Length: 224
Image (spheres, helix red, strand yellow):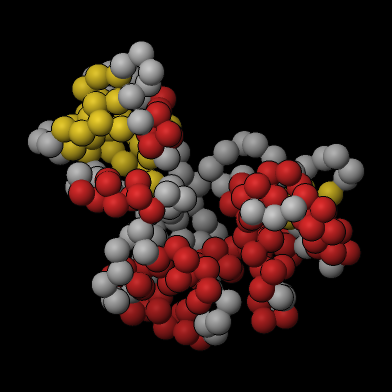
């Protein structure tokens, strides 16, 4: 289904439902969607009923909300637009990675399919956005990232950053100041009783990160 046949609100709901399960096994429920979208539970419940009627999601009372094949295809189109626009804003227009999310939230509904593909071509068909999230292909294929969060890492581990949640712009600005982004190498130097980490980036500067900040950084074990 072409995205221009769906309202902006419908596109946003589909994107949120898909995003909830992208990096976690937790199911998408009306309460989780409401919290993610900042909406009342009753509004989300009504919207889910409309999505079910449109054949975009499946939902049994009190159960998880799951995208149908058509709903997932539409969700991935929106995700692709969003992440390509974020990448374009950073690489071409000089935005910083903490500035692009809100801009992309608006622009993803305004651009045409032709513009999205032109952006993709100009950027050289990137596979990750500025935060390390995989960009779905034009056919709807998307990489599944492995890894753990820094919150789960052990003292002494050497790690490579895979992705960083873009939910907290202040955290993104702080990490940028430490030279930490996707593909950065980190070493866990210590962990205190409250879960605060002391880390080394690239074997040089050291910095501290709270448990909340560590939970937003996804990493894999360094191979060398």
